[in-house]
Each structure stands twice: as C-alpha cells, then as structure tokens.
Length: 239
Figure 1 (cartoon, helix red, strand yellow):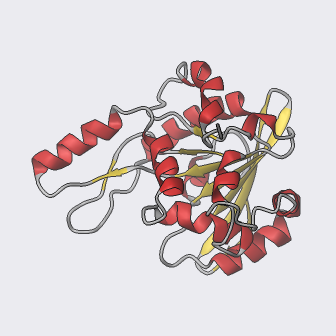
Figure 2: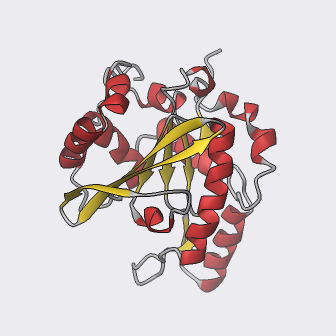
C-alpha cells in the first residue's frame, strides 16, 4: 500500500503534544525524516480562519476547528486529494519555488513540513476584511516555533509573510531586497548546535508576484533552490 504523504507525522507527535501553545499538529510528510539534515524544508504559513453565515454558526466553526488538533494536516491533505479545493497559500507555493503549478505536489509535500505560525483562530469577517494577528499572537508564535524546530530540525524555514519577522526575538533580522512594497528578510536561529535559516517572503495573496519572488530566491538563497530543483518535483507523477 502506498503511504499517505503525512503517514509518518506520528513519529513526532509525542514531542509535539508537549509544546505549550500549539493548537494544531504540524503536517510532516512521510519522507521528511529521511531527508539529509541540510535539506529539510519547513514551510510556515500564517493563520487559520473561521467564518459562517450567522453568529452562532461562526462561533460553532471557531470552536470546532480550534479544538481539532489535526486541522492543519487535514487542510494540506485535502488540497492534495481534491484539486478543486485548496488555499491560495498552498496553491501558490509551487509557483514560488518552481515557477510552475505543474509539479508533483504529493511528492513535494511528502518531503516537506508545514504549520501555521499563529495558533489562534482568526475571524474572516463578514465584511470581507480578515482579522489580523495581534502582537501577542506573534510573541506566542515565536515561543511555539522555537520548540517546533527543536523537534523537526529543519535546515530552512520558508515564512509565508513577513509580519512575524518584526517580532523575532532570537537574533538579528536582515532586510535583503525590496520587491514591490515588501522587503524580503532573512534570519537565523540556533537549535541544538545547528543554524537554521529563516526566509521571509511576501504573503502569497492576490498581489503576490511569484516570478519576482522566485527570482529573488534563486539569487539570494541558491542553496535552498539548488537542492529543491535537483529533486525533479516539476515532473508531475500523480494523475
């Protein structure tokens, strides 16, 4: 039987369950633990949102997903199984990394880890203006992040969005290049004697230029892009 992309995530679950402030278990692809120590990618999204047509429905959805530890994993899994359903972030990650949507997404996510930085449900308000995380959400997020990377030991962390960098409290954040209105940023965090690179790019929303940001990654982070490119993820193998 073929493994599901996240089948070996439970290798880390005992440690994840000890992380205070972690609402949702990270997605961990079944091949992630077998990756070379210098070729492990953790993608860090921003938030989960709740909505609903009535106040009661909204509150019910908020509580339902907040109290569902596998929610992040289910979101990634559903995006792989059902191509008609995905999120803007998940659908744009292949474009950001490979300049194409035609990649073997099952294989890519089998080798990759993912979780959302903000561990509180955000309100996708009925007026169409999504709630933004508060300063305390980011401070809590960094405490959780430090423990997550202590478990997963990624070599590279790709942050979808730059807001979290403004509250980074483990060292210096460098602004590397301005693309449009957004400054790309980079930082490093030491865990267990290893230095993990944190790469912050523009949030993958409707004004996101994946071509420009892909060029940036190739120019500024050739180590990451070299080993990603060597995996031939661009060759779609799932039908």
